[in-house]
Image (tube, rainbow, N blue to C red; front, side, top):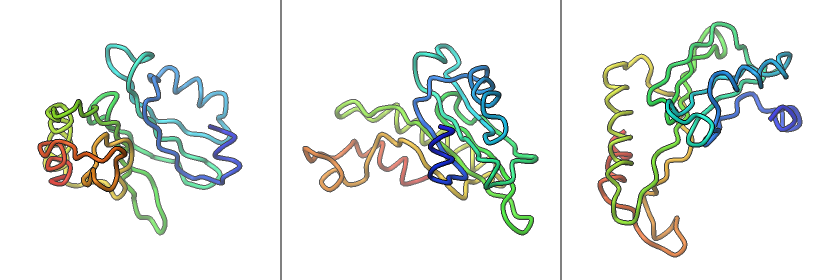
Length: 161
């Protein structure tokens, strides 16, 4: 991560399926404390074996002072509020949505509904940037090979967000 961020001159890196809890995040940050600031959220019951999201900031390119972290769905959705240019703040959200299983998109849809509800209740935290592994596509005929559509329940829930 350190080498990638240095060589590509990345200011922000958003990761999914990290299998990393706060303790491991602190270890990574300690090893590269001159360059990196690590924010992570692990699965609450199995942080080293499944799920996990992280946002890593490169101190050489972005201001990390007073950055705030919020877990929306532990191990699956996390938000940071960071300093941007001219005194502005930037909200960045990373997600790792549940998989769609065949024609069953219920768990994926419920995830997006939870995220939507969180931002409805916390409008000042709505993300300027949302990225990650959505595990659903809106147009399966274009974005899947072999072509197939994901369940409408899941695609509509993401679209409503």
